[in-house]
Amino acid sequence: MTSATAVQTIEGTIAFTDLSGFTEFTALQGDDAALELLDLQESLVQEQMGDRGRIVKSLGDGLMLWFDDPCDAIEVSLALQERFEARSLEDDLPLWVRIGIHYGRPVRRGDDLVGHDVNVAARIVDLAAPGEVLVSEACTTHVTRPLDSVVFEEIGPTIMKGIPEPVPLYRVMRAWDD
Amino acid sequence: MGTRYPIPEGSRLRVLSVSGSVEITAEDIKEVEIDPSDRRLDVSEDERVVETRTKSTNLHIRVPQGMNVSVGAVSGSVKLHGRFGSIKVSTVSGHIEVGEANGDVDIRSVSGHLQVKRCEGRCRCNTKSGRIEIGWVGREARAQTMSGDIEIGTAGREDVELRTISGKIRIEVDPGRHPRVRLKTLGGRARMEIPQGSDFEISARTLSGSIQVEEA
Image (cartoon, rainbow over all chains, first blue to last red; front, side):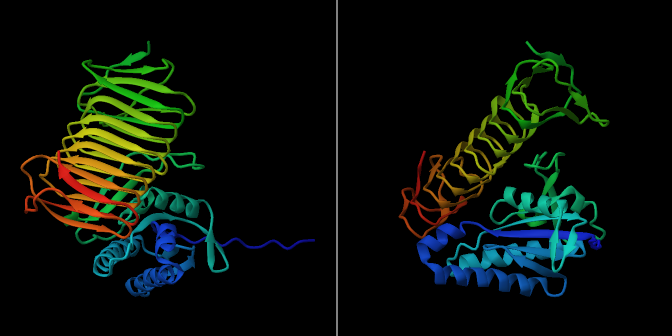
């Protein structure tokens, strides 16, 4: 006889970051420089996120993040891109990070999160450009407070591999970027 | 010969394709024609969007010149011939070719080459592995690829921001326009062959390729 395991779903916001060109950077600059770049990414994320979210796990050259509030996810992501860009110019490092955000109900597996909504978030970051933040419509509809100087620009219909229905996506920008 | 559909004035065509190529031609016509003829064209409640979907068929669509078009595809190329309004295309594993746009162009692919002949508005191109060619852009341009060359012609009126991880970057600027430049390459040479100025800014970065800025 086997015992049933209770499945615990939680509702909130999943974000993925992905450091573009990490493989090429490592080949050009060596392992030590690559490790420094990863550490820099993680420390900037920790610093910017504070207690508004948590790092679920590290994925080689990217991170999976969790936020209860989609507004926090969006604000932190935009602030992160600004920090990444500033450091990238300052230190001549290719800290070119893509961020994809989705709102949903993933399943807890220890400290990890799994499920359809996690897969959708992972597909979103695949479509994001370095320096860009893309969010799903599911995320924008759960924005419950005004976000200062933030604009959403629809990027058109998106069909993702393995996801049966189109996922409308939006580019999130500071109003002054437009 | 496909089926013709009347469309509300000012509406945007939206095409969703899981597999198969999408080819759209802008012509001097008033209606939208879809081939194969068994495809439906649905009109949104507010009449701002007309939409067709396919799972596995190659689509050939004719639209009025200047029409705004959005395409979402998974696999298969997307080709837009003729002159359109604004264009938005996203595909997972197909090449994207765009003729001319009076408005903005925003195209992206996970693994495909991107080509835009002429864009009067703002142009954004993003691919993970593929080259990017933008024949001429009238306003701001942003193009990013992880593995591929970038070639662009610019009117030199608004800023140009280009990034590739491994590839060359070549920028042609319309005569008489003089950019401020920020060119950075970790493993190549940067050559600026026109006088610098303050008309607009070019920011070009590559990890392992050369950068060249020259007059068109």
